[in-house]
Image (cartoon, one colour):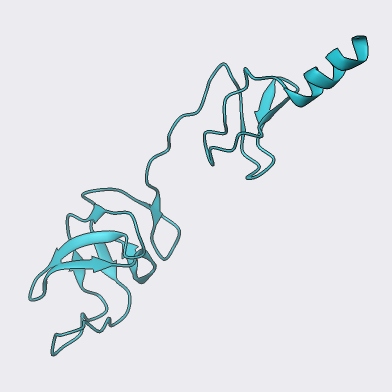
Length: 124
């Protein structure tokens, strides 16, 4: 009878552990007052929980960008459907951060609304 209970406890591990806040894995486990995720390696404490960091976008130099920042284009960028390219050194004001590959939305004089990759700009 005792052996069956051990097997049941083994088959149904602690059910009070929440899923990983980073990758939503159900296989999180507790270790030394921390919760760990074996799939993504994320660590958190149950007391503090998880604080969403939000969208983090870095420029070509590794500086964090924020909505409303001004950036400078670091190289000539060809634009599909336009007769000329965006020249290196062009200053872009009031950017908006977006999800995806082209993670900066902005307006550039002479081109209109554009989506840029953060790897081609620096904070300025």
